[in-house]
Image (cartoon, rainbow, N blue to C red; front, side):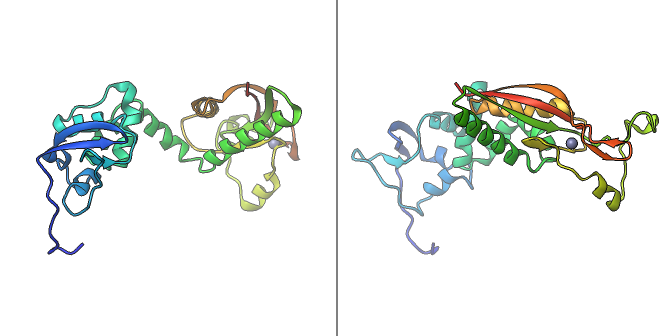
Length: 250
Ligand SMILES: [Zn+2]
């Protein structure tokens, strides 16, 4: 907007209507941190609609707006059980200093640490969607309460049998491209996760899958039902562990 345009004036004490919930605050509170959406909204450069009683209207659920105001007023942080919800609001109003502090608190720090591992598996989210989709279709087709899926989760390939080179069995096995072709194979499962290079192991990934499904209200149990016994070449068998997931819908 042109710098010579007249700025709109706001009273020092403002009445706000955030999605039907009323708040009263100082203009200086809303402008506390530059580069936030609230500071921009109430900078005078934008017209803010008012409700029938003259309160400035923000079309957003007002549930956590009080927590946002308390942070702007005196840096107060929300109680732990609200951190996730207030973080979403802080993202909407783009309040950088609040976002930073919340991300250093649980459970958000833990999620960040976990995400650093899951970033090694770029297909993770898509695979999760596939699990949900297959489990839904399978249960509907069979008119069943639950569906079972076979899921392969392997951290690394283990193509060398212990009989051949026992010392190498636990080490990473380097292969040339042509050798890799020989081992290329898709296990007969619904979804496959792996390989990855990290300290986190198969059980950690299983934990991610089950807890992410639980987060979506989907209850899943898993158990190992063996390894893929597909013969690849010579003495090499696939041997990737296969887990059966039971997803119960109702
Ligand atoms: Zn296999």
